[in-house]
Image (cartoon, rainbow, N blue to C red; front, side):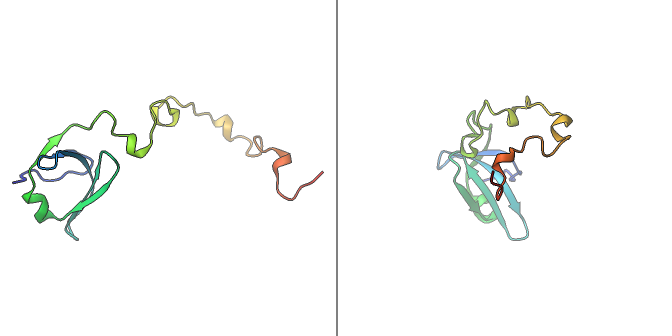
Length: 105
């Protein structure tokens, strides 16, 4: 049945289950393929099961980041976050002296 060899980070559709998933790990030595479904659930198949499945290559769904809780507006993930070495100049610049443990007025 499955004539497609699994590729790490590629998306596939299990035709029988009508389920989209991404291959997140392949271990040929221990004979398993680890997958993650769109809803975030993790699954695992051995190569014999994979070969019996009816699998099609698929495009990543538009909301593939949902299980990872990655938001569209998160600047750390969209490449718009500013990086400045000035943030690193003084490691104590952002420490609130009143917040130090064990120090009382």
